[in-house]
Amino acid sequence: MADIFEKLIKNQGPLGQHRERAHGYFAFPKLEGEIGNRMKFRGKDMIVWSLNNYLGLANHPDVRKADADATADYGLATPMGARMMSGNSNYHEQLEAELAAFEQKEDSILMNYGYQGIMSAIDALCGRHDVIVYDAESHACIIDGLRLHPGHRYVFKHNDVEDCDKQLERATALIEKQKTGGILVITEGVFGMAGDQGKLKEIVDLKSKYDFRLLVDDAHGFGTLGETGAGAGEEQGCQDGIDLYFSTFAKSMASIGAFMAGPKVIIDYIRYNIRSQIFAKSLPMPFVIGNLKRLELLRNHRELKDKLWSNARKLQEGLKARGFDIGKTDSVVTPIYMKGGVPEATAMVMDLRENYHVFCSIVVYPVIPKGHIIYRLIPTSVHTDADIEETLKAFTETKEKLDAGQYRVELIPDMAG
Ligand SMILES: Cc1ncc(COP(=O)(O)O)c(C=O)c1O
View 1 (cartoon, rainbow, N blue to C red):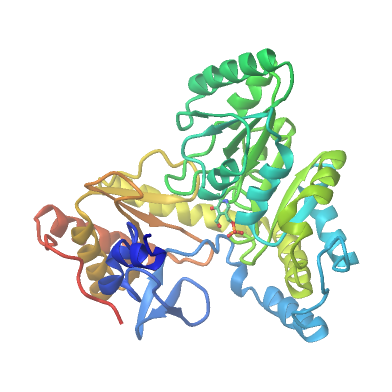
View 2: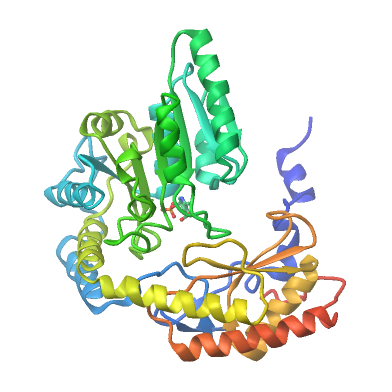
């Protein structure tokens, strides 16, 4: 019989195989100091482009005060137990009502984490006769939700509405043959890797042809898109066609937790059937009160979103003017596409950090195909013109070195420790 541990030690997984040289630097780095545009990494000041603190709320004085006051008043324990049993409060219900109103939906439900929340919501919503039609580049939490789904699922090519139409046709034929079940389409408001918005408007338009419900994960659109910041549905003028709107608090809200908004009767159904919330402790009060404060600021200070976009435009236009390929982003998420192997990418990142003091995330094989590198820059409202200028200069110089083969190394630089 094989020993499970022995197998795991032999094969640490696609990313884990690099851990001995990468840990603490390329993976699991420790950024220190106040969350903002500049933080410390291994004692050096860095311009930080890897935090989804889009609106700069992480360190907003009103947010810090609300978090501190709520922690002093309630501690982290209150309320104890699951919402359904003993963990409910007026604050939880107030946050749900305010989020629903903001998203122009009847009701919403809080979730402790986005990842497990949406996974579990998919599980609650769909039974074995239902069919899920989803975008090929959906976030891991959606894919894991699909793993819980006992029925059929059809994937459409990323943001390809024609293929979505085709998959809906297949799904409809299957449902008609089964004579039972329904269709749930799942996509994202903004795809976090490439920054392209999901084609929500076109998918909503398919409702005139097929019967289905639409669930949108708008983790990166919430707070950053739409006139009021209500997200990609508002931006594209199709919020009404989104049956279930989901976002995490981990990005624009710079906090933790998540919510799903939709028709009252369906949100109530989820409330009484979502296993990850029914069998888990309620979101602690400081998070709920802290999130109420964040939502208030997000709603009442549109200048934060305006500043975010002004920074995003400067960064994106600056990159394009210097000949960088930033793909098809139409959100603030700013990818830079380059070619190179994994060791080369890490050597370039090391140069960016050590000599240019620019800290950003990289995405390499096996997350994307071999030979490709994506640098992912996340602008925020707290970045400055100087941050953008220095970063543009850093990328221009390091790209020249990359093209000249100066980062060609056999192995990932050994930076563990
Ligand atoms: C698209 C998307 N959905 C869901 C999540 C998970 O949310 P959370 O961090 O609250 O678990 C993330 C990442 O945070 C995300 O990018």
